Length: 372
Image (tube, rainbow, N blue to C red; front, top):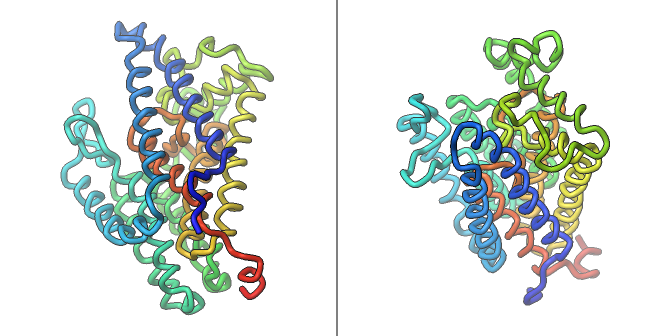
C-alpha cells in the first residue's frame, strides 16, 4: 500500500539545493548588468523568487496527486502539446520586435510549448508501455511508440529548435531502451536518426557554424564561436575555488544569455571546479535515486514514468553541462531548476513532485520480484 506522508529525503534535499542555486545565481547573473542598464537590479531576483515559490508549491501539489491521475491525462496532454506546438507556428510571440516561434504570448507571461512537450512525451510513453506491455517486441509497437515523439520533434524542428527536437528523440530512445523493447530492432532508429540530424545540421549554415565553433572555438572566437570561447574562459577564470559568488565578470556583457543558457559557466567562474562539480554530483544523485526508486515499483506505468522523468531532468542537465563546457555545440538547453525561466521551472517542479510521490508508492515484494 501507499506509505502515507513518506518521501525520499535525499531526493527532496537535492531539489531544494537546486532551487537555492537558482535564486543565488540568477541574482548574481542579472543584478550588475541590470544596474549598468539603469534597470532595477532586483527585478530578476523578484521574478525568480516568485517562480521558485510557484515551483515549490507545484512540486508539493504533484506529490499529493495520485499517480493514476497522470495516467488518465497522458494522452489528452500529449494532444494538447501537439496543438500548442502547431499554434506557436501560427501565432508566435513578439520578442523585441521579432516573431519567435518558440513562445506563446499569454499576456501575463510567455509559455514555451516545447517544455510541456518533453513532459507529455514521458507521460505518453509510460501509458503506451503500460498498455502494450505484452507486445513490445514487435515492429508495430515500436513504430506506434515512436510516432508521437517523432511528430512532436518534427513540429519543434520547424520552429526551429534543433536542440529540443533532438533531445526529445534521445529521451524517447532512452525510455524505450530501458522498457523491454527489442533492442535489436530499436537500435535501427538512432542509426537512421543520427545521419538525418547530421544532414540537417550541416545543410544549415547557422548550424554548421555552431559545429565549427565547437571544433575550433579559438579560431572563430571573434566570429561565431564567441559564446563558446567566453564560456570556456569563465571556467578557466574560476580555477579550483572560483572568484566568489557575485564576483564574476563574464556576466558583464561578455557572455550573452548567462542567466539561462550559460548559467553553469557563471557557476564555474564564481564557485570554481569544486562548486561546479558539486552541482554535477547533485544531478548524479537524482539520476541514481530516481532510477532506484522507479525500478522497485509495483505498477508498470509508475515504473516507466519514474525512469522517464529521471531521464528528463538529468539528461537535460547533462546536455546543459556539455554545451557550457564545449562538449556539444550551443543548442539552448537551460539547467533544470537553476536557469531563469518560468516554463522550464514549472515543468521540472511537477516532475520533481511526481518523483517524490513515486518514492512512497507500493514496491514489489520479494515474491513478486522472484516470479518476474
